Amino acid sequence: MASATSSMSSTGTCSSEKTETARDSESKMVTETTDGFQSVRSKKGRKRKLESDKMETDTSSKRPNFPPLSGEKLLEGSEEMRKIPVPAHRYTPLKENWLKIYSPIVEHLKLQIRFNLRTRHVEIKGSKETSDVGALQKGQDFVKAFVLGFEVEDALALLRLDELFLETFEVADVKPLKGDHLSRAIGRIAGKGGKTKFTIENVTKTRIVLAGSKIHILGSFQNIKIARTAICNLILGSPPSKVYGNMRAVASRSAERF
Image (cartoon, rainbow, N blue to C red; front, side, top):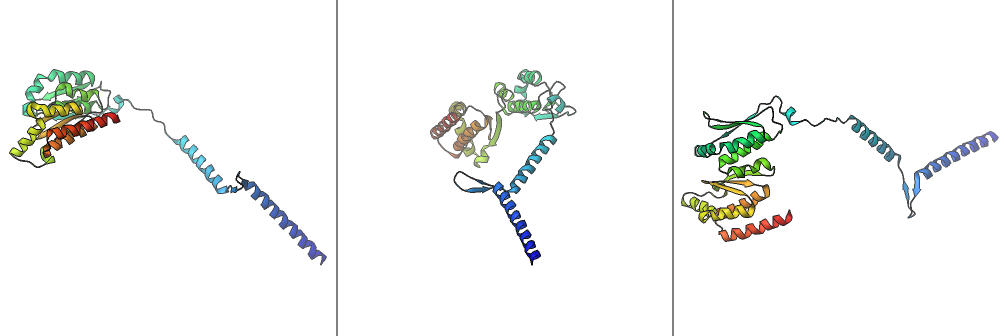
C-alpha cells in the first residue's frame, strides 16, 4: 500500500509539473493588450513568415539582371524593308517634294529611301548608322501621310512627336449613302470654300484630308476622337452650327482636363 501511494504521488507530481510547464508556455504565447483582451501568437504564422522571407531572398538572389540593348544590336542581322504604294495622282507632288521627304529620312532617321519606278512603291530600308529601333515605322508613317494627301510640314510632325496618329474611314462606314446624298454629305463636311473643315481643324488641332468618300485625320488620340465625332454628326445630317457648339464644348472640357 505504501508503494502504491508513493507511485501515485510521483505520477501526481509529474502531471502537475507538466501542467505548470504547459501553462508557462501558454503564458509566453499569450500577450495582453491595452484593452484587456488577450491576443494569441500562433506558431504557424511564424513559420509562414520565415518561409516567405526565405522565398523572397531566394528569388532576389536568383533574379537575372540583363543590361539594356542598344538600337544597333537590336537591328543587327535584320534587313527589314517597308514599301508604301503611291497612287497615280500623287506622282507629281512626290516628285516636286522629293527633297523635303528625302532629307529628314536620311539625315535624321539615318534610313535609306528610294522610289521604285517599276513597282511604283517608295521603299525604306535601315542602314548601319540607324540607331533608333522605331525609325523605320516613323519613316513609313511620314511617307504614308504625304501619300494620303497631307502637306510635308504637317507630316513632319509624325517624326518629331510620338503621340500623333493617322486614322482613315469612309462615309459609308458611318451611313451608307449613294449618288447625290453622298456628295451632299461630303459638301457638309467641307463647307463653303472649306470653311467647315478648317473650323474643325482649328478647334480640334488636327489636320483633315477629304479624298473622295475617304476621310483621313492626323492628330493626337483625343483630338482625333473629337474631330471624328464632329464629322460623323455632319454626315448624319446635323447642321454645322450645332456641330460647332458641341465640338467647342468638348474641346474646352478636354483642355481643362489636361
